[in-house]
Image (tube, rainbow, N blue to C red):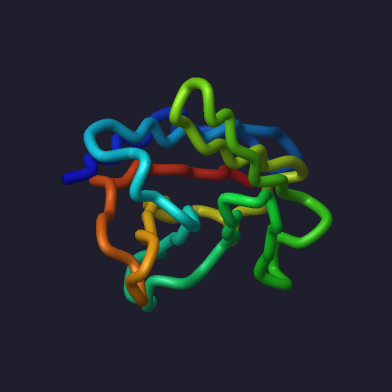
Length: 118
């Protein structure tokens, strides 16, 4: 069992920055890829960024160049640094974990709200 807990959300003005954190606990040795998703009101959940256990990253076009995903394996934490935030970045951000030998996302966090005011 793996548990994920997000933190770092909040309200920020357009152009500002936030760093989201996702702390993993439990059977962390089973985690392969980790990712961040977001869901705005009335919209489907969408991928923001992913990072593999080897450190390979992937970003949605909407955040590419403004966001960085990185892992601190010693702290069992994945981060999402978001800069130059826009009102359209407003959403609940979720952390997810994929496990070795499995397809798809096996565990999700509870989400953290990010609100960007214009």
